[in-house]
Image 1 (cartoon, one colour):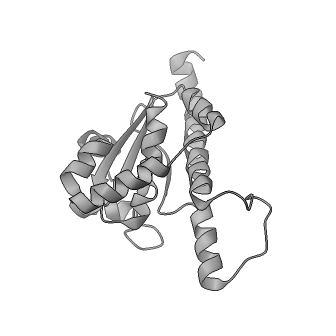
Image 2 (cartoon, one colour; image 1 turned 30 degrees about the horizontal axis):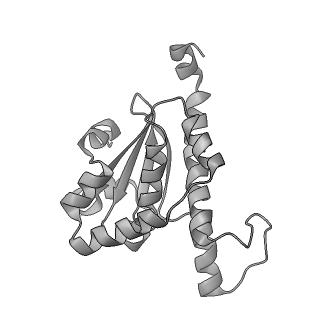
Length: 187
């Protein structure tokens, strides 16, 4: 069984992860996408309202295109609330975690585990968001029936930002509504 708390403690900050594992080209690509990410006022306000300490363990690779297009979003989230603590681990240096977080039988990245303040898992997700999979399905297997769930005028990046925000909010609500944590914090 994986000790997620120990893995989190061994993880690196966003910048330290890029410095340790990224080439100049990798860092350029991550920085370029980071500059393209923006949050709406409502998204930023939601993040600022998070109360519970949220540890986010991200298994990633600086070489990975999916990581390039998602991890900078997570960094923006952390910048809006100090209760959101994100640590990155390299997939190739953490084979045990890569196996534990495999998606559909593959060691895909990014793979994320949300942990509460006591290092207990509260959710997992990865490697791509629903919006990204919808776009890939339309490109690879043909257009699906419109669901009405996603406004067509939004860009893929905006949709992916919202998808990730939904995952973060879900984990935060699990922590906020936990009877054990509510008793512990008196709320």
